Image (cartoon, rainbow, N blue to C red; front, side, top):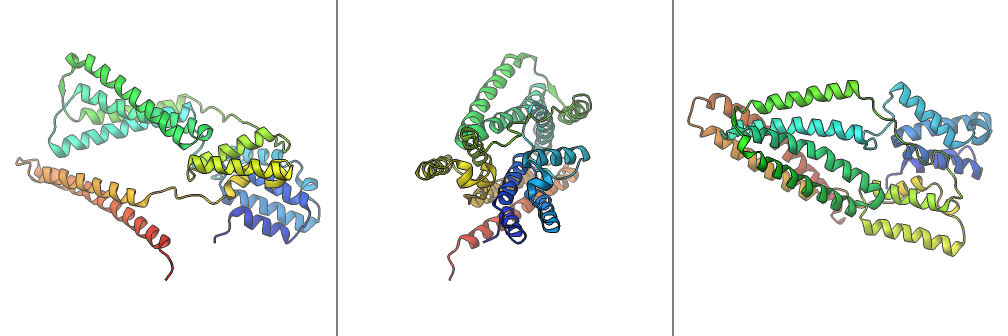
Length: 354
């Protein structure tokens, strides 16, 4: 079994110090790094530097670095100021990122609608241009709702909230377009590209003119005696992992509560920092490879249909429709190949040993 970063850190610390307070300091620091969205490898590297300092001086971590929460705060602030790649790419979703995601989604769907019209000889209208933009703008808001609910209520509630948001926005968009149906006019399909370029320009302006809000900091100073905060942080981290069902999260929380009652100890004494403990638990399968494979094959089928439509156009546009359709088909085929490799690997990993 592959060792986790914290397992390696603990092993390195045991080679230079057997003081329990040093292990507690390292555990809290590692948990705070993960809570600040730092890459586990970068957190491991920073803490290994502390362990080397302990080996060189023989002093404790508290003597060398002080409070672990404050040390982590200073480290992460320095990394953010320098613009290093120390953080996970999935920063916490806020309204600023929601706007950027919505604008980019609108640009992407506009290009997809243009490509569809181009390959299938379909015409378009002003309402269809607005529809393509609306779908893209909806994607950002839907994901924002999902990302806000997931760490608080779990995957099932996040899906339910995202689904309700999707239904509500879809009906609103459909109603608005129905009311404006008499204003719709046929337009050239390149209007979709103009709309996409407009969205990209809006992204640039928004990025330049609207400053990104600072991430709201919670529980900067770790208090091991705060039982409610420990349990809340533990549950939140389990939900954020995306590889545990709601039932598994509830079971893990129940096990922690039961064990704490039996031993009459606080959570921190038995399990350490909540983020570190949550990340140390074995996860469930986060990806269903066969679903990826079926989705990839479906997209290839769509690509074949588009290519066939371009091939049988029967007009002078075949010379450019066919190469463009072939490029799309090749991209989809490569995606299907990747999904098939993932599916085969998962099957081999799950197969019983002979």
